[in-house]
Length: 147
Image (tube, rainbow, N blue to C red; front, side, top):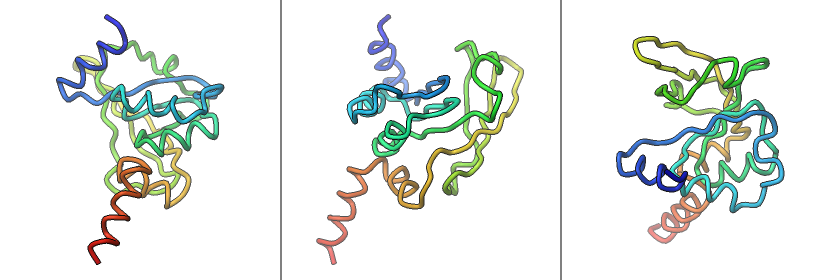
């Protein structure tokens, strides 16, 4: 099955997707379409060892949450194989650079690891919470028209 077909199948099931990556995620792909493609595939979170600066910002602008592993951790050290399910705990009151918990469930086994949000500013928190910059700006415009 192609990546696109798999993503569409998960969308039918209403299953949000997460990508696990290594260092410098987005390096060489900082154009806004790289983040748009990610969002259009239904990916809601990218967890990486580090992010390319502009791509990190573009992900937030598309409503995709960039999270970072703690130093020395990564998908390899956590032995993530793709048959797990994941939950992120601590997003109910998002703040810049806050710590969140990634719950990893594999069969009956569950464990949590700490991740850092790569949302750096209060404005980025607002963009992310609104689903990206475009929905944020649209809501701001519509709110001004109503007043």
